[in-house]
Amino acid sequence: MGKKLSTITFGFLMLLLPQFAFAADGNTIDTGTTSWMLTSTALVLLMVPGLAMFYGGLVRAKNVLGTMMHSFVAIAVIGVLWVVCGYSLTFGNSILGGFIGWNSDYFFLRGIDESIVNGVPEYVLAMFQGKFAIITPALISGAIAERVYFRGYTLFIALWFLFIYCPLCHWVWASDGWLFNAGAAGVIDLAGGLVIHVSAGISALVLALLLGARKGFPKSPMLPNNLVMTMMGAGLLWVGWFGFNAGSTVQSGLDTARALTMTQVSAASGALTWLIIEAIIYRKATSLGFVSGILAGLVVITPAAGVVQPVGALTLGAISSVVCYMALNAKMKLGYDDSLDCFGIHGIGSGLGVLLLSFFIRNSWMQDAAAAANGSWTVWNQLLIQLMGMVATIALAAIGTLIIYFIVEKTVGFRIDDQGELEGLDQSLHGEHGYGLVHSDFVK
Amino acid sequence: MKKIEAIIKPFKLDDVKEALNEIGIQGMTIVEVKGYGRQKGHKEIYRGAEYVVDFIPKIKIEVVVGSEIADKVVDAIKQSANTGKIGDGKIFVLPVEEAVRVRTGEMGTDAI
Image 1 (tube, chains in turn green, orange):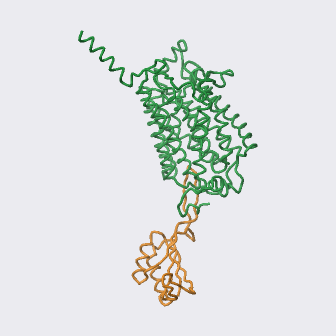
Image 2: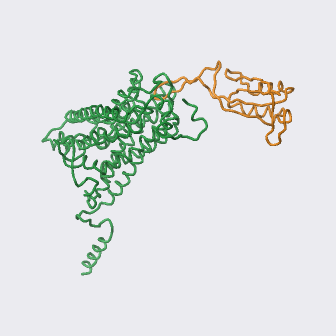
Image 3: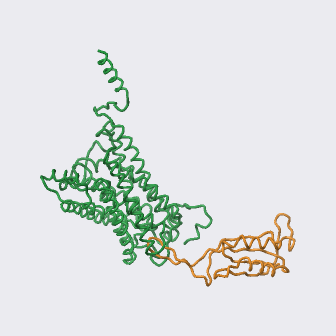
């Protein structure tokens, strides 16, 4: 009798504790996972100012604010579009043959006010995903730095988001997306190797070629105005990336732990490798090279953090730095102006990760895939699926960017006029002055 | 009165200032400048792209003194700013027509 009473009392008390609260649709909230996802959402948002600082420090002083605005304005433009229709277009049910999603309950997020999905309030998942949508077009801005109209840029990212990001995100991450379901267990892209970095990288290359180089490129030196800020930005990106990769596991468990670990390992490996490359070639390891190595390591592991192990992460990080370094050299020989190396690092590095991860997948994943594929699934099978994802991404990004470029250039104008470019974005487009320092005007 | 303009290596500023103080010069103006002469520029590397930066940071010291001590001042600067290496700088002497102390209105050598 005493035991029964204490059991009932215990049960009653448990009901009072928040982690066992019952929401309207009967799901319990997993507070552990929810706290982590809330944190991850904030961490990924932190990457946007981080990116702004990273890019901002690399351009000339007269363009520092304009460059940072390219990152910041995405928060506003995509932040609003995501809520209005983005979440529906990406995670709604497939329509138009699976090209895009649609769910009338998701417009303005009006139908998810009480929805809990696998223990996490759907708002959190929607907001988390929205941060990815925000940062992706901001990455592209690196390739077209110092030479675009603000109005052209904001129109471009709005259209790019709607017609390239939303379809691609739907294909890869929606449960009824065709790439999500390709092969035995889908294309492997944990946190956006394809969806974010390859798409941005390819679009960046296309735009860099279409818009043409900055005036004076490549003869005039265009030196970074603030590598201190770039380094700080790199630090924020690295920390934020834990939310980016580990948060993409949408749990607070073993997969999360793995993703965080591989992210750290790959970044460190990439940084060390770039350091060594420069030490050997120039006898001087540069800070810019170091942070570039960090990024090379982070982008390569982005698709792979869920399936590879530390040895794989170390290897991928190192290979990424080597290949990205070579890509940057090739860029100088080929002479196109991907100003801040969006294609050279994000496109190349993450593309490498999407493909090479095939060779480092942990056995348990391969076994599960084999079971799902009725008996057999090899590394080469998976590589083919990864390749399929790459081709689809490259095609969508390249063709879409080409079309959107023309729309923007012919309507509001994209490439800035000569006078504005000489004067600098800050003064001509924003009527502002980045630094109060005496000599920041000194650099042409 | 003479104006003495000396372009020197930045890290030599303290030595020059002390040398001038020792011969009785209590005031001066400095400007951060860039320039080059026979000293070649230096190389900077950004993501694998090497740039030769021609203009090297220097400090220009300006001091206005009575004509009779101009030579002493030039010598003091010459010795204290010297390192023996290319890029030590140059000193120029210019005539000054007039000088005024803002606070009191004193003119001429009373103003310097």
